[in-house]
Length: 219
Image (cartoon, rainbow, N blue to C red; front, side):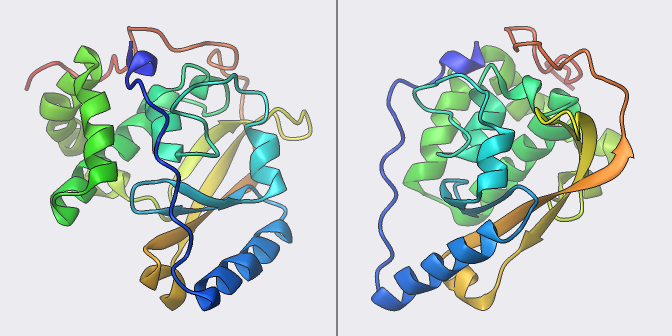
């Protein structure tokens, strides 16, 4: 199963190289905390640099995992954590496949990168995810269109543990200031929508070996 991939906890994230960068991130942390919506800052490998309390509350109910906690690496959480479908509605089509496709493009554009290659190795350890990565993604992108791979502006379902929200939607807003870009980081905010969704059967479903069903093994 995909959530068994990988045997080591991701390496600790390096500290900012300069006091100015550290001070900037500290101020970013204050800004994130002032936002009522779940928000985080990630680097190009989706290692999580900052989160706010709304983000931590959204994912506070997920169980422990050695390599795929949402506050450590958000891509690993989406791909490998068995509890991901309990928070991320329509997990396969709305979260897993778009982020897997985005990861594939990042690997192509960054070339050799230790963090990206570590995730790639974990994908390869899961036969279903590897088939999706190598053969299914081109078919899926042709079916849904190139825009589905984009992160910024995507509207995706969430299963919020707060009953005031419950099963709802969020718009993912990606922002990269000049300084964040220099640090190789992006800020993501999940702007919760007012429109309520019908409860999803995924709410209490842990993902097993049959995930990624909509992706054919070969074209």
